[in-house]
Structure formats: structure tokens, C-alpha cells
Image (tube, rainbow, N blue to C red; front, side):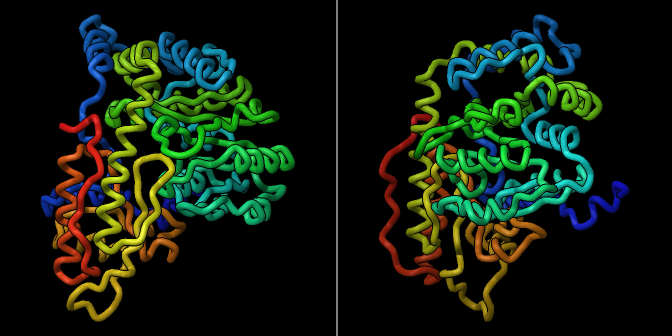
Length: 410
């Protein structure tokens, strides 16, 4: 299949398109998942120091030595994983590049990749670009993984399953029991688990269990994560892949020809953050995001949306079907509603269909909001959303009052 045919039906990134729409309408952008607060000072200082120290040329293609060693120590300290920084870690241009590198390297044309739905918008297209077939299994906010449906999705053609926990956009943190069921199926069908763990430290319920730590999974797991969300540096594009040596060799070849390598001075900055930020930093990160989650979730519910508080990550999928818009003779699609909300209310979400196959019907009554914003932005968004009820669009509700403020108020 040629490249043009592979990309037939691909849409421009809806998320980034909504960011442009927010700029056009001067709306509050709760569409794209980038924080508006500063990264840790030591991280920025370390990167600036690296630039002034002339660490400005290519790093080793698979990652700066210091960063790979810092990552190996981190995975050992946090999860008890013994990882060889020379042969099992590849630093990439963000977790997004890590995912496509892994799929292109490890999945053969015609094989199948299981994708939980709703999914981060790249997973389906990445699978198709690898000439494989995505097979979708539902994973909905607040609902347990349907193990029977998952089992039915596996077959002799299954090469891999993409596991995103905490998940975007569903907000699920998969339990140990759910992951053990995934493990059992991977072992039974000799399949790989390709895990996106970029939100591992933004968690409100449960524990983060890297599937690579489960018996039988160390040699069949490709673990992906990155600095973007934990350290609030989405523009730095520093991610990584942890995989057994026999898989890493193939991944590094694809990575080399895709991007050559991640930015050298920024890798030094991330290494310093991994070395010096203590457990208290990660605890505060989760606590602050919990406050933001509760603030936005409360505002959405009081404005007439139906939604479940996420267990992790920083997104809320909200059902707007209970809102009756004045002058509208029919129910709006998710895209129409997202544009209307951006233009008329001044808050921009992402249409829910962008997280379902082919823009499928599963998301037609949903929009996704982010809460990786400072309190002043979220409070203003809450005030604007409250006009839905005051305009008679939603049931009359009491004025929104946040329970607390996060520690990253600016």
C-alpha cells in the first residue's frame, strides 16, 4: 500500500485545529493538553546551562548517556525494573514519535493491533501507517475494562495491544487485575504490549502498575513515557522507550531514520530533573491536578454536562446531550457544539468523535476538556460555562464555588 492510500481518511489533527479556533474566537483553550504554568526552575536552568556549555550538537542517536542512566535509575527506584541504559532505552522526540517508531519497527503488514476506544487520536492512524489493522475495544470513563470483549478481540493475527494508563481521554487508571488479564492474553497469543505511560504521575485513584513488572511481560513489553506532562514541557519533545534488547535494536533503526535524535541540551535538563526532583514533587503534582480536576468537573456538572471525574491524566470527557440550545431545531453534532461553545460561550473543547474510529458515532454527544491550566483560567472557564444555565440552556444551578485552590495558582 502506498503512502497516499495509507493516509486516505486521515483528518488533520482535530485537537490542534481547535487550538487555532480558540485563537480565532479569543476563547479559553481547554482543547489541547498543554499546561500554561511554568516548568520546574531546576529543569529550565539545567537546559540553559547545557546550551551555554555548548551541548548543542547531536546527542547519541538513541539518547544522551546521562539521561539514559537517569531513566534506568528512576525505573529501578520506582518500579523495581532492572534496565540496561546501553541496550534497552531509546530517547525519542516525544512519546508521539516513540509510538510510531515502535509500531513501524515491530508490527508487520497485515497484523492486528488492539486499541482501546476512545483513544488518543494518533493510535489508530499510527497503526494504519504501519500497514496493520487496528481492532478496537471499548474503555469508557468510570467503567471497568470488559475482559470478555478484550479476549474476543485477540486472535492469531494479533501482534500487539496499545495500553494507555492513565488514559487519554477516558481518564481510566487500569487496575492490577485488569492489567493481569491483558498480560494473560498477551502471553496466550504471543503478543506485545506497547504501553503509553506518559501520565504515570498524574493520578488520583489507584496505583500505576507498569505492565512490564508483571510476571511474563518483561520481555514482551515496550514501555513509552516522556517529560512533557510530568514536567510541563510539552514543547521540548523529549520522550523515551524502554524495551528488551532484541526489540530495542529494531526500534532504534526506525527512530534514527525518523528523527536522528531528540534535542541535546533539553535531554540534559530532563536528566537533571530526574536526578534531583524528589518524591514530594510528584506528590504535589498529583495533588495540584486533583484540585484542578475537581474545579473543572464541578463547573461542568453544574452547567448541565454529564461526566465522570477521571482517575488519572488531565482530561474530562463530557456528554452535552442534556443541553437544549435555544433556536436549534436539531441536536448539534459534537463538532458543531464544540465550535458553538467556542464562539458563543468562549470555552473551546475537542469534539469527542476525534477519539473514536473514523470519527465514529461513539463520540457524537461528547466533548473533551483539559484541566492543565492555572486556577484563574479554570475559574474564568467555569464562570463562562455557568452562562449556559443562566441563559436557560441548562437547568438552573447554584453558582459555582471551587472547593480549593491548587498549589500552582499563578
